[in-house]
Amino acid sequence: MPPLVSILIPAYNAEKWIEDTIRSALQQTCAKKEIIIVDDGSKDQTLAVAQKFASREVFVTTQANQGAAAARNNAFSICQGDYIQWLDADDLLAPDKIEKQLELVAGGWSKRILFSSAWGSFAYRTSKAKFSPTPLWCDLSPVEWLVRKLGQDLSMQTMAWLVSRELTETAGPWDTRLLGDDDGEYFSRVVLASDGVRFIPEAKSFYRRAGHTLSYIGQSDKKIEAQFLALQLYVIHIRSSEDSETVRKACLDCLQNYLIYFYPERSDIVGQMKRLAANLGGQLEPPQLTWKYNWIKESLGWTAAKRTQLEYNKIKMSMLRFWDKVMYDWEKTKYS
Figure 1 (tube, helix red, strand yellow):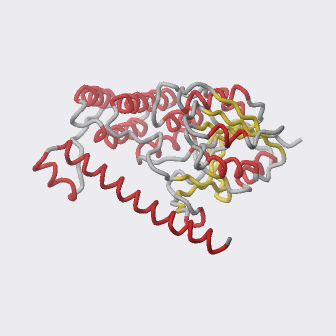
Figure 2 (figure 1 turned 45 degrees about the horizontal axis):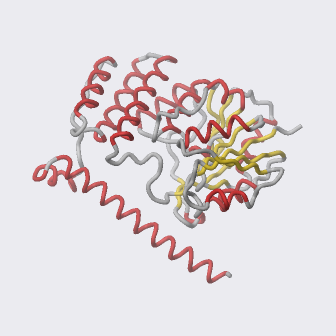
């Protein structure tokens, strides 16, 4: 019998995108699937849109707003699948994404093997999705995968994975304390619980860059503190598996890359990061800005330079999304 795949979709204020996301789940060519949607107390019409798809194959429920991690934990508590496909409410799967990954399952691979896949980022048109291979796009041992992620500041998006129930239960629940980077921390545990990561390039998914995401830190003290907690957990997780010089260097590089999010405004966190770096056998250097913002730092200070960089990136992404929407709407009109 083919395995049952549970496609789990947490949703909050996603009425604009969730219909496309659900359709991409329904269009999966794998033999057996169930789709579970947990509305996290949305204030828009997300729940109503999702309920239009309710059927024997699609289960829709709602909860008081508790955050994405709690919604994911709720979805997993309901599901019956042998394999788990996590899918955010604005992302999409290629129709054969899961089937391509399951081909290895049919070949007798252990349930302790974790499957990853290629993913591309887009705004409105999946045909223009940008697939940018990284050193994570290959078969890797658990520790080597996490060393590359931490040391080189890389990511594998949530929907790119296919996880067995056995691995999911071993890794434990999503951490509801994390307001951002909860997926990075969660999958670091899943990776380390596995016997290795198997990358399937033919399986594809699409990550929508539609504005501020859960991983956006900004100037929120709660998100800043949650991000520091995630960094601490990264270090704890990987060192519990291996405490080599290579691992400690990757942890130091990770702390250095993230230091700019806390420096200099949160001197308390900066101090804790320096102590953590010392425990790893190294030290952190003051973060550097590119030449475009360095002159602002020299004249107006670090905070002004960081905010300018943030606003520039927001404006740049908004312009790119606006242009892609114009072309998306034009193509729809042209071919309708």
